Length: 219
Image (cartoon, rainbow, N blue to C red; front, top):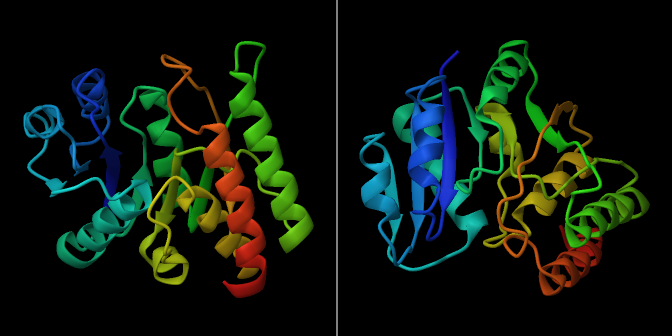
């Protein structure tokens, strides 16, 4: 099975080199999407992969993932992708779990983080709220919806093609899986929190909650 690791990033030069170096221990099939960075992220990525896609301006994570998937599935002709974040908050050693799940025929695989007393409170509350609202509005419970560590096949992407450009993409993917009643599998993963201020803010969480209600009506 031809699987690519997809990593979107925006101003990620702090950790990107270390992340890509570790990923290459498990796969040389890497696509990095530089989403309009102002730092040297793209130059760093080119040391590790020939597949570096660059947005001239910052379009958002959802747009970066869409750019990567269109490239991977339509240009490279891969069978599946694994999404990872560029900030070193995912354990690269868990990549084989996603590869195996895809090879076993799973179309969608969600990485679900283990929560501990060290988990930032906003992340914990935002994650729980998204899952509860999804269950109430769409009748399906998917844990840790905001997690960026996930995988999908080409067939699944054809069904799930999202419209979201920003952080809400993770929630839209979960909504589409729920509405389509698509089967999915879950892999428990570790999370490493380097920068508590990064990622979803209270404003992002409110925006995602609003999107959930809108998608209930119109998606």
